[in-house]
Length: 140
Image 1: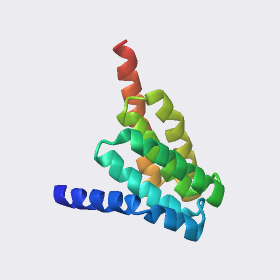
Image 2: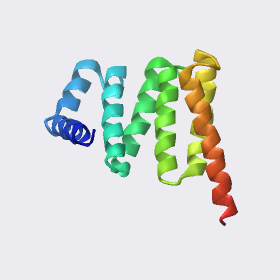
Image 3: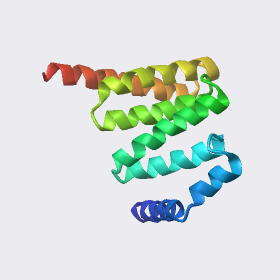
């Protein structure tokens, strides 16, 4: 698993360095969902390799692209919001994470239903976030 992550990380960085992301944007347009998927994958690699400052603007852009291209209630928007919220949680920015997690949960519930695995994951993420916020507040 560790070596696979290293291999994937190198491949993404090499692709970015070689201008492949720019070619995708030129081919599909900078606000195309396929571009957002590539950017999201790169952000996931950055997060997994603790390059959190580099991941954040990518996650924001992914959410923006999906919202503009697919509409504000699409499940891909919820996934993007959830990914950004998880990054905020990892950097102890719980107040910023909470509204994103709540919105992601609402989108999943409305579009996929209350028992869908993505909805259940978002609900679990919100419960964990609430517990972390309470612990953080009690330590002040």
